[in-house]
Image 1 (cartoon, rainbow, N blue to C red):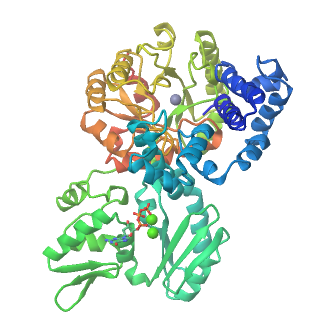
Image 2: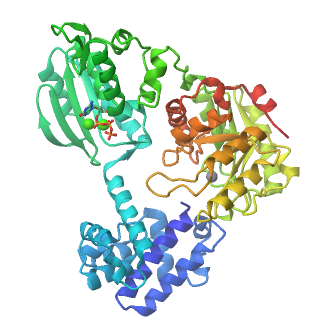
Image 3: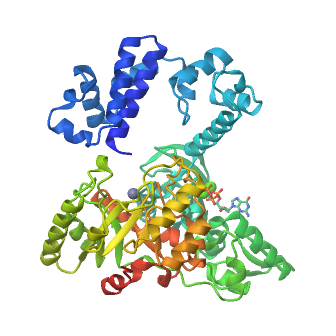
Amino acid sequence: MSANADVAAVLYEIGEILTIKDDRFRSRAYLLAAQRITSLTEDIHKVKERGELDKIPGVGKSISATITEILDTGESKVLEELRESLPPGVRQLMELEGIGPKNAMRLVEELKIGSIDDLEKAAKEGRLRELKGFGEKKEQNILQSIGDYRNKQTRFLLGAVLPVVDDMLAWIKDSPAILKAEVAGSYRRKRETIGDLDLLVASNDPDAASQRFVEMPPVDRVVSHGATKSTVFLKGHMQVDCRVVPPEAYGAALQYFTGSKEHNVKLRGISVKLGYKLNEYGLFMREGDVLVASETEEEIYAKLGMSWIPPEMRENRGEIEAAMEHKLPKLVELDQMKGDLHCHSKWSEGTMTLREVAEKALGLGLEYVAITDHSKSLGIAHGLDEKRLSEQAKEIEAVNREVKGVTLLKGIECDVKADGSMDLPDSSLRDLDFVVASIHSGFKNDEETMTNRMIAAMHNEYVSTIGHPTGRIIQKRKPYSINLDRVLEEAAKQRVSMEINAYPERLDLDDVSSRKAIEAGVTVTIGTDAHALNQMEFLPLGVSVARRAWLTAKDVVNTRSVKELVKLRRG
Ligand code: DGT
Ligand code: CA
Ligand code: CA
Ligand code: ZN
């Protein structure tokens, strides 16, 4: 979300709470200011830098101070205090997407609902309809919001978990008692969200190994502590389960705790048919309980007549059948990625210069990065018009001359307008190496409208790929309605790629849709959508999605060299 939208949301909420409190005058002022800032086309940070916040119509001294505070600290004391002054039930209901202070107050006062649990019960029983303005549809939406809220409470984005795991493993492995350590579960399968972490440790001294685990610096609370099984909560509420096993049983435990449950159930069924028994201790002959394999996963899969299956594929989506025929695809790997195909810079809403991008790319071992700043209709993001785009091209050429070993490609993240046309004329797009076409508006349109809009965009011969094709934000915004089958069919005809946007909240296309894309004959591009230098490190997340989608190197455009890439241009 842009800073403007963040600020407007805070002001709006202050205004709404003031309405409840019957402070009409101040409430009107805040709601009006929120409206003004929503329709402001300039980035509010820039207005603040010029010291002109109070020149925005409707923004006086005190609101301008509130805005400064929000921009500087990300919070507002006024809002905190106002929220505190509300009854607890109201505050809790307001945690739900789509429930503002006014409705929360009505639910509490008129229906005597005191908590999210109460609200869920009332919605299920169809009792919310008694309230004016609430119908069946709204009840359904509320139930959905409650589901999302609960989900958000308990699952973490993969991108947020990666650094936690790196630190944890570094700590754990730095103990002589610990011979091997890995995180299994959904983390190893690289699901887009993670419920809890399942740490697996090989050790001949389980007491010392478990002690090392519960003493990790980020541990907030030890739930249970035993020699072979312990559970802790980290600061930030993530749960970590730890199992300690002897090294000779490590493979069996790793296989078992990696899951998924569906994959394991299927595998156990096959074991039984073959006269075996499979559990977390090993693969055994049913007769006489003789151990057949346990030290490595490879041996276990081999004894079952299968190739070893990469963890990202273990979802019982056909991988077991493919492994029995030794026909698993050779999944794309991170070190095959030659470039990043979606990156912003200071020219639009990024925070880094082009030179910094080039140097960071060198550090990451990339051959190229497509500079894809926003186009002009995204005023808030300071999108590029024709003139600034050609100025940027000159700077790209200069950086390419100065920084050796990496190429910045001239690109754009071109907005797709409501009618499906491009935000920039062909005369501008023609000069670029790489065009990402993205939809950033009209998310509530129906499927037919959105699908036609995207298909129209693909008919522009300069479009290379469709950016974040479904628009979903994990746990925050559902995908817009789109007929993906129709889109993919057309993409194959037009030879347009689909993006896997590697930004942690997006991962869009997701694994299932990316696999559909390849099956429809469409290639995939991976882009970090970085807005800051360290976000260029998101590339592995995109590769994880690709691997979960069974993609091979040839399915992913980023495995091509610069020369091959430029040849893929259609226009
Ligand atoms: P999560 O934590 O919700 O993101 O998902 P997972 O897959 O990490 O699930 P989790 O932490 O409950 O369990 C880790 C793995 O352990 C799971 O993928 C498979 C295995 N597992 C756990 N409980 C069972 C079970 O009751 N039966 C079987 N077959 N496997 C289990
Ligand atoms: Ca887990
Ligand atoms: Ca677990
Ligand atoms: Zn975008």
